[in-house]
Length: 477
Image (cartoon, rainbow, N blue to C red; front, side, top):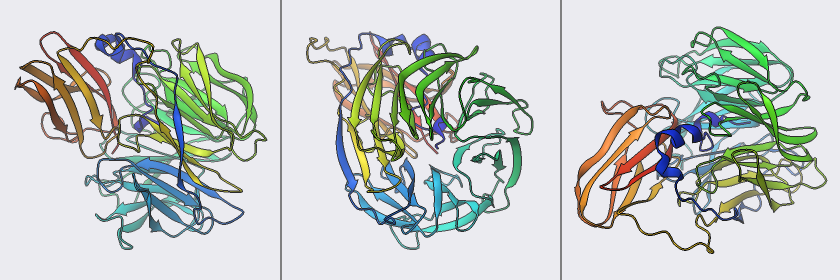
């Protein structure tokens, strides 16, 4: 599984709509379109089992997200440089299911968290500055016992990234990070639980991270991660589900999307707070071990991706375009070759959310579904040009810096500011007069006092004389 609370699919649709309605005016998106490309046609994985881990993040600091995969046999962990897809070794080991790319030590570059079977522990790999070199990584233990699901987030609000894991059919727990992550991490139990699947998000809206695990959600009662209450949100579903926390209908509340990761069944989202089930895909999918939520068409609402793995006879890889506030969906078939533990992010640097996956078993390849969706339909006339256009923000998601490009029809004063998902002011990037033409500003992920802000979805608001433009920008530490 993955920790979607810090990735591109953490959509804050309702807050954006309420605070910045210009984002939603006049949108006209075509049907989703993806181009299938192969990153590695023959990853050096064992012929039987198993290419397990997939993660996306900017590993080398070039402002474009790279791809990491890891195996239970043969290859250990490797990463692919976007966009030439040169393969580099990360380290040896036998790794299980989930991994995360995040800045664990807070030094401005991306580290990696993995669950290692061969060493029997959760571990983090420190990026020493040149991840392309054989000695570019150092490995440290977080805690004993490998786990199926791994998430990264600040559970207790101390500014350090903690690690939450789900040991399948056993226990959900978290490791509290010390101020220096090279030291000893504190292991804290959350619940004994059957099943699998894990994601983080502020489900009750009180400002701290809660979590969804299998069919349950757990409230972080004291915001310290030492007291939790559990609630069953999908009582009619069986165990072994995949979980995504996201606002699916734009009401400002975090809902939960689930699929059957091992067995067969529909794909649904459960509406917070009464947990009414809304079916996205009624057809029973088999082994839908890939589940993601992202705004693929950039229209301000969340779309859904899912994929069946090798256990399915049909091996369907599907995207669902949100055409009605989370209640109407258009299904698009991307492939019938299956995928496992696929992830989303902009790995081509064009501002659109792509999909990367690989097969767990059998014939394996690392595969990219490049988002080629046309965001304004060809049948619609081009909208009149406004005095201010935000052309693009790249990379998005980002970990160190992101460039915001904008274009002015006429000379004038422009103010560009960043807000957090709750609409709170973070920083002003520009407030001055610019000549007509293209311009750009840089955000380094810091607030007005120069302090690094946490991972999350931020709102970039650009305003000129008669125009306001707001876009979502995802920071991944």
